Amino acid sequence: SQQGEEDPQALSIQEGENATMNCSYKTSINNLQWYRQNSGRGLVHLILIRSNEREKHSGRLRVTLDTSKKSSSLLITASRAADTASYFCATDGGSSGSRLTFGEGTQLTVNP
Amino acid sequence: NAGVTQTPKFRVLKTGQSMTLLCAQDMNHEYMYWYRQDPGMGLRLIHYSVGEGTTAKGEVPDGYNVSRLKKQNFLLGLESAAPSQTSVYFCASSGAGVNIQYFGAGTRLSVL
Image (tube, rainbow over all chains, first blue to last red; front, side):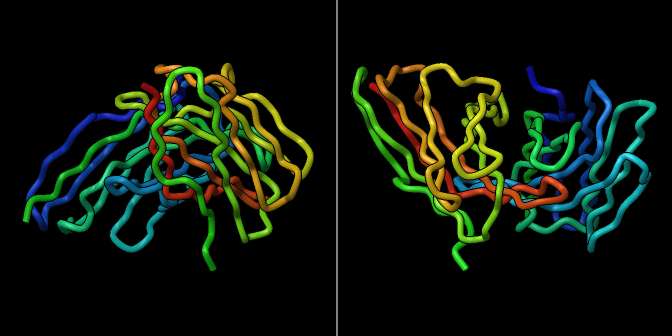
């Protein structure tokens, strides 16, 4: 079964608005990552947050991690039509080369 | 720098036929992975490899075999295809250290 669960499953917003996606997981982790998948393409790594970090920024992306609640959120600010994609969280509970467990994803649609 | 390349991009098989999916990476990564992606189920790990000559089972290995004879290549085989193996298959690789994975563009397989 999947470790991560994303919420919501689908999100539709207008260009310029902020988009927030949430991820919950079940077991302890070393780090949590977010990936983006454009339609018909492979996944692309966006950002990684370690278990001892609470917040991380990268451009218009802001990720938070609450290990006590076993949850993370991805915020995309000032969204653009090009941000339309599926977003997946992935957890890594072991050492390098260990398996990532992916959530089922949030489909984000940004309307022009 | 091509990254991760998967061939073929599309394939249609009849039940019982066999085929091999090829994944090649040019980043000198130690770790390679095969996933399948089905609607509403995220990515599920089929098999993975932590180095040349090694393979290990993932979450859904039944009906698949893999080989890693060269560090840059990871092959996924279907010996006797079944309709339940209709899916999109993704290969990924990662280097030493933090497990950030780089994905190929995917192979869309239909088994009739």
